[in-house]
Length: 267
Image (cartoon, rainbow, N blue to C red; front, side):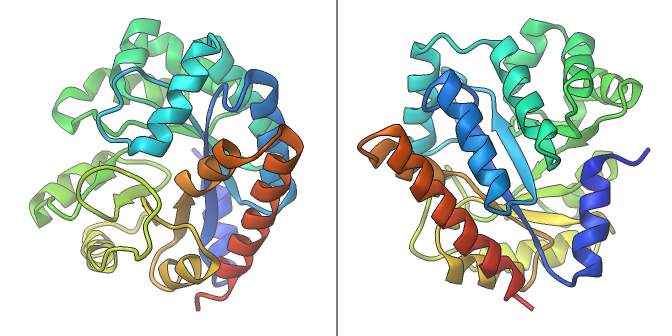
């Protein structure tokens, strides 16, 4: 099975660079605003878009993403809005995935959720809190609906664990670069490079690094050793701090263009 995500990594490898993946929660800064942000990101040159499923108890997310999720939930965002945002993203032509905790998938119906991802042009789902031991139902649904099950690995994972997790993963491996919660940082943890090398020793899948990149220089640095750079909090901060929708979109667009240059300078 070849998804738009698989095609993206073939393309960026041929261009000898990393992919730029942008994260935005569905329904943020508003339902209509989210569609505009997605369009702005795609126009500015991001390679893939990750739509967040806002959740009331986001154990892995830092304060910035939590704040955005709260705004989204207060705006009444539901599963249908997540799938609608995914469709907006895939309609721009970029590879698109959803990131969600397991609870919303289970609540919606495992097979039905995988089907909705596929129907709306999604290439896969990132499930940060789903362990491979509990993933058989999800792996079956992903396989049936031809979407990639994307699992997350962390610096604390043993080599044996990395081999087990990556053997069940599709699309790319999500490497969480720092222990603990997500969020933009002034420096990207040295653990990240080491983790990517360890993952590479057990799988040929692309490895993308998430958690903490917010500048062109950081993107360049992470792009030097990874297949993809995932940026979320930095975009969300700009939207949270902007005076109005138009200036927020402009700020997001400018940062995305800078980061797109950064991932191309990495090698």
